[in-house]
Amino acid sequence: MQARYENLLELNTSDWVLIPFEVNIVDAETELQEELIGLRSDKTVRNLLISFRSNKIAILADVEKAFLQISLAPKDKDVVRFLIDNGENGVNVYRFNRVLFGVNASPFLLAATIKTHIEKYVGKYPDTVRILDHCFYVDDLVTGEDDVESAFDLSSTAAKIMSDAGMNLRKWISNDCRLMKQWQLEHFDHLNMDDFVNHPHRVLGLLWDPQNDYLSLRLNGLLDFLQRGKILNDFC
Image 1: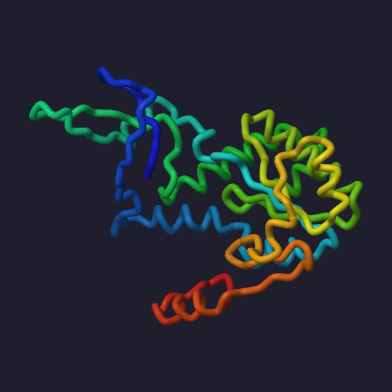
Image 2: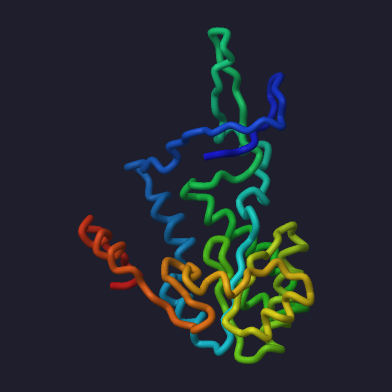
């Protein structure tokens, strides 16, 4: 895990450090981990994929450095303390300022933050808020529309709403060249459709060819998954 740390002692705060964390330990006396996973799995991969390809025009984007956009409350920072050897037979104590990537609670915190923010706009942009509420999976926006005008309006409004929270929607990609052209004219941070001719774009674990608009699956990964004896409840 690479993260910027807070200076509680004398240290150059522009430095970076790689910190290994074991943050997903299960407490046998509680079901907190299961509860958090359940809350963030409200919008399942299966349902998102069905919704994604139920529209003529696909729309994908992601939130840039999503977890780093969420500050921790001062009272919560002690939970994410870490120690660094100061080289003088002692240790310095530091705390994270932002939500950590890789912690089981982090996707829930991101989803709750996004939900709280977008609800401010439900009166002004009800349709866009509904889509943002149902079509985010962690930091990925996976949705679509049936015509270019609606697709562009959705992407423009979604970008504005998220920008107001300091979250940049980027890497926009669609299966429609006309929409891609509009994004380019409006200076959206978009991907190039030609870049995926030989390297399909990943969508929620599947491979998507935006030019020919089909989804595919690499079976070697699925076979390895099944051989480990794990069960994916969403697809059972």
